[in-house]
Length: 122
Image (cartoon, rainbow, N blue to C red; front, side, top):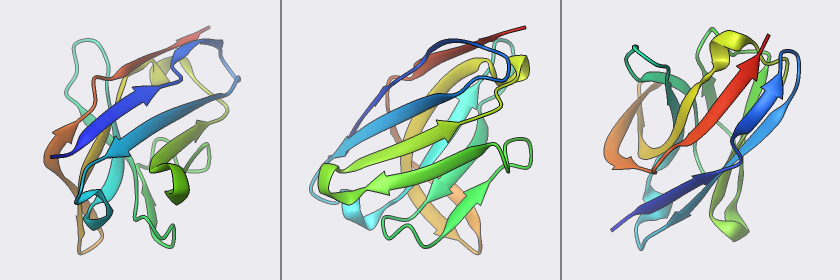
């Protein structure tokens, strides 16, 4: 059983910053790679970033590379998404997931948090 709880969303101006947190729990949580996805109104859920618990391997969608940073705090079983230089098109509900990295691609194993809303104003 894996449980994920996101927090840290809110309203920011374009060019601003925000940090999202994902608190993870479960007996097997360390066996998963962690990822962030987002879903904007009227669009499909899309991949944002992924990381393994060692922090050695990180992956980013082209749309956020250079602006977002994913990291972990293993003592707290928490994954973070630091978002800088935010744009209105970053507006979405952001979800944390537990999954796997295969040949450099991230796939969710079906575990999701409840989501946290990020809104970026012009």
